[in-house]
Image 1 (cartoon, rainbow, N blue to C red):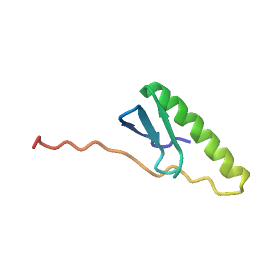
Image 2 (cartoon, rainbow, N blue to C red):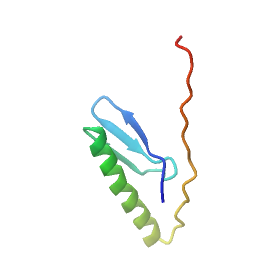
Image 3 (cartoon, rainbow, N blue to C red):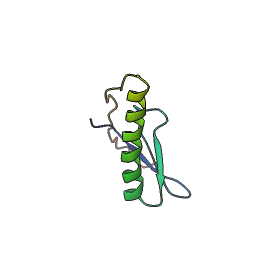
Amino acid sequence: MRYVVIVEQGENGIGAYVPDLPGCVAVGEAREEALRLIREAIELHLEGMREEGLPVPEPSSSSEYVEVGAA
């Protein structure tokens, strides 16, 4: 499966979350670390859902960049 991951720069590190998996988040000091940790978090999140007998959501989010003129 391939899920969209949103990566954001925070005051104290890089945060990552998965819109299709509420509560699935990770934080790292660098982008690479945040992406490694969110991959692990997704795997654990899905494993937990399966163990609880919950349906695993199909990836449905997408992302696009929209260009706008500078204000």
